[in-house]
Image 1: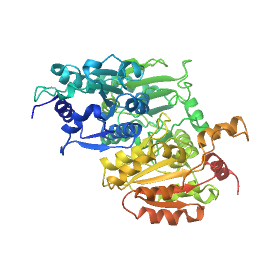
Image 2 (image 1 turned 120 degrees about the vertical axis):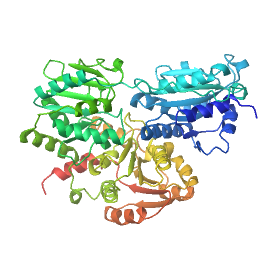
Image 3 (image 1 turned 120 degrees about the horizontal axis):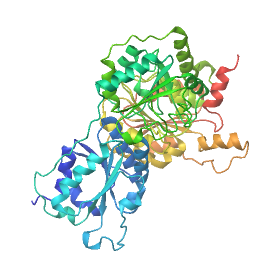
Image 4 (image 1 turned 180 degrees about the vertical axis):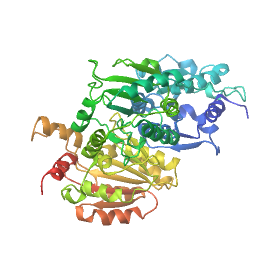
Amino acid sequence: MTYRVADLVVDSLLAHEVDRVYSIPGESFLPVLDALYGRADVDLVTCRHEGSAGLAAVADAKLTGRPGVFFVSRGPGAFNAGIALHVAEQEAIPLVMFIGQVDTPNLGRGAVQEIDASKAFAGTLKLAVRIDKPERAAEELARAFAAARNGTPGPVAVELPEDVLSWAAAEGSARVHGCAEAGCSVEAAAECAALILEARRPVLLVGGECRTAAFREDLVKLSERWQLPVMVGNKCQDQFPNGHPLWAGQLGFFPHPAHVKFFSEVDLFVVIGSRLGDVSSLGYAFPRQDGSQRLIHVYPDANQIGRQFKPEKAVVSSAHAFVQAMSSLASTRSIDDGRMDKVRATREATTLWDPERIPSADVFGHAVTALAAHLSEDAVVTTDSGNFAGWVHRIFRLQPQNRLLGSACGAMGSGVPSGLSAALRYPGRQVLAFCGDGGFLMNGNELATAVARKLDLKVIVSNNGSYGTIRTHQQRNYPDRVSGTDLSNPDFSKLAQAHGAHGFLIERAEDAARIIDEAMQVRGPVLIEVRSEADQGLEKSVAAMRAPV
């Protein structure tokens, strides 16, 4: 058989260590599907919607550190997948979307479903390339993967004209351009060390740029050597041991008063692996720019440093290279008991809870409490976007062996696709996927994929019959004038059974522990539906826990 461009595409995947791709099949890239036929070295995962295929690829990129890859058809397929491109851009995740394109004679003629990816997704993509010359296909593919990873990682689109995929290519021509590794010099580390030693109330703010086990291990050593309290960005709760004395908590969409107070007293922010956007800076409020708070900003892309805040010291480096460089320096810094008390107070204000005082009406809080008792030391936890996730972040105590896949940019529908990706990547590990009723009905159809793959995936659905986060905003701004947020839902536990999964239903707080115990003993896809009241959530439950008995 002639070696085709389609075969080169698959070989390029392997050259870039891609061993799994997600797809909604399309006639426009049939030669690629043919090239994947019978291949044991690339797992082709057929999904039920392009949006969930893309979000599963995003999750896989977070787990592996390599670009996530998925294939879609042009037009409707690509636009369905647009949410994944947005998430990858917002969260700086390397992602490559292959698009089956019209054949070359019809390019630019407005053929059925034709799009120009560079224009359609302008402002979101880092790069869009079109493979229309076989002799340059290997080069363009290598460039696409390099662009996805270099600097600030992000999404790339590769258009594959239908006829070109069947054209002859040079066998063995797949190539890798590599990724530029930004490092931290000895001199830069020494300057940062001097600033840290001068500071009285520094904090180490950690983003998600590096997610490896080795980085997390070295991060703990750095914090201990330099006695630096650690705060992490949104959905980065797994980056630092949640029980460590230097752990100050995870930031979220809504600034917690304890975090605002803590940040207001900081005199030096050491920010690593984060672009320092609105969430990490508590609405661009910190570090203050009046000279009272210094900033060391460490990020591998120089273009991201100085965009919003003036750094005292800018270091163009990966988070891990910086941590390693700083850990090699001797430190005489200590932290006094008063400062440790404030770290502990901040941590407890955002994570302390009393299961005995969770209102019985908040059934989901009791369910999460029961699930926390079953959490394994290397479990993977995924959270969709929604208020319900607050229970997970408050109750679960994550360690560096755990992994958290959350929707840091607030995109709904990621819970089940992320759980699918995690269960495929780590078939021997416990995977818990938390969703709201709204988010589940966006991409919960991937439960069918989990059933087809016989995955050991536990999906927990908070069913409060509402788009709960928006309802909370409504109740704050327009009390008792709920509009457009009520939902009519199916019986999720029975829906799971119709898919071939095991379905469980929790309706009362007193039944939560028993049903969770039973569900956690089951192997294979499981869905646990938890019914709760729309206006009874974490905010009211925490208030009740704080109230005197």
